[in-house]
Image 1 (cartoon, rainbow, N blue to C red):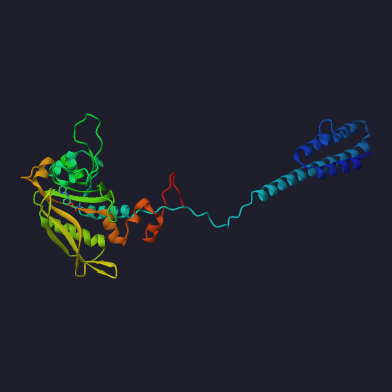
Image 2 (image 1 turned 30 degrees about the vertical axis):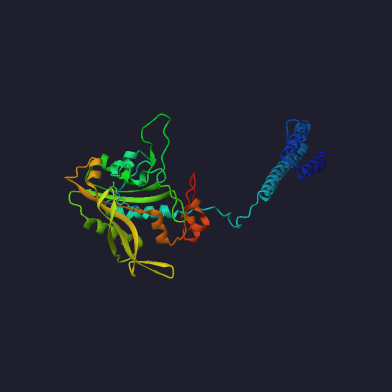
Length: 360
Ligand code: 2NL
């Protein structure tokens, strides 16, 4: 059959030079489509005599197969080239060092609150919570703090504003967490064993005082609780908290309106080269205030003082944190300055908590 070599050359060259799938499809239709050149030649076979038809038919079929194969090969080649180009464009260096993530640190006050809570939990104390804005009955009256007591004065306590014409006593920012324990006794009754950690507020601001600080108070009420129990609980707490085998506590008679008798508690320590050592030495450091709950306080909280008695204590968490972790300066607590926190060994959390969750 005439012209097959020319057709072959034309289509194979065309296919080799096709730049995309659309050009390939055009060539396929021109050659093998219903009205394509090869198809027309196939139709011509009908008019040929049998011997010529056999040879021409075989040649045409070979050509058809060759073009078909060339189309397939070119199509695959184009796809490979496209993939290569994409891989090249989207290449990234997986060996680059990761971008550093900002990491949070646990705040010393949070850490110490958790430590204290865990130690008292082991001795059967539950955690009680309450409002930071208190009414003056829970913050003062119930605690046997009389109206003329200096703590109630404008310059010691933060008073909330009342609407004009409202003559009721204003609410206060709680000056201790004692009102939390009053509420716990009032709602649960006796016997009870709770600690109340949390923020408290006093109008005080200098090198060693901030207007907001943290306190933990403890309360144990039962039928036969004595100061001996108080002393054991506090010794146990100090041994555990300061991580020393033996501690020595000294009870000094004192006065609080809400306890009778009352005692301030000192711990034996030494200060050498600016280094504090707990449990040894010839110095005493005051760490907390305590006493037997005043019968009037029990009665105010709805607990019968002829049937129940118990001890209470209170201490400052910020100071405990500074003592235990050797933080000499309140600046470490302001605005959670990360440089100070790191300096005092509060390393990044093992697993940063990020909204939405983050896994490493
Ligand atoms: C201190 C002294 C203290 C209490 C707090 C208390 C609570 C209730 C009843 C009786 Cl509900 N007492 N709390 C008792 C003694 C001392 O704190 O120096 N805190 C930093």
